[in-house]
Length: 367
Image (cartoon, rainbow, N blue to C red; front, side, top):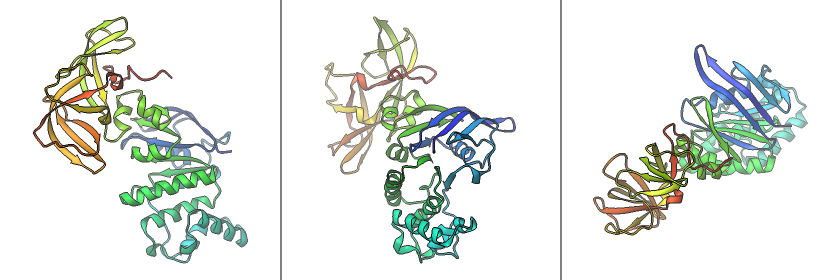
């Protein structure tokens, strides 16, 4: 059984606490991604599951067995690291078979497991090659093959694609997704790349400063971030943020005002007149209207075009509202805009996220 349970897991290095009491259940066969910035604790948490870091407090269970203090080799896990760590003097077959031979498995079983892993990873024609004759993507597949042949209960991936170029990362994402679909084994995947997490995971665990900020399916976290950290980390380009205030509250409807933006109303539980809040607007939730329009088709602000990035099917427009950070607007296709143009950016009020002065969402869907 490959379910993983973390109960009150903590990690400290002397007086410095890096993991703060994490509780998490991962179902058998689930693909879960740990995401967060550098220093968030995601790799440390993965290494504790693997047994490569000791646990300061709490319990780790794999398949119902408490493995908190078990040796890595006794946990039923296999880990794929950022570095391929292939033996240069061995060919692909020998690299994949190395751990099996150390375990003194019979030669026919070693042969069968390696051939099966090579078939799954499409390495059949490369078994006689040395690592020096392989591309980066092929080397990573060999490293994954070395893990597959151990038939683990849980696969652990520690930023396995960060050494690859952009095109190879896309290819390997597809390979890993196909691998999970074919094997059905529990997978825990650490990455700082939210695109990898969004495209691969059944659920995402967002970490910051050693604490879980939110757990949920990728699209749910995108649409309903629990706080400003998650809102800014999940989604590319990142969410726009604007300081604002609650001008008044009437029958549960808060009137929100931000510098340069037309006021609008949102239902906000617990909002009080005078509260300082932050508005969050996705780049794709903004649209352009005539600069001199005065209609009531949504909260709008005047801004100057700072830069236009045309990518063919998508165009990013960076706007200077005159105060605060630049705003990013995303449109499909192209638009006749030039640097220095004055435009009117409009958002649907219902698409605007609102965060309180502690960064907590005031508009997230109830859980």
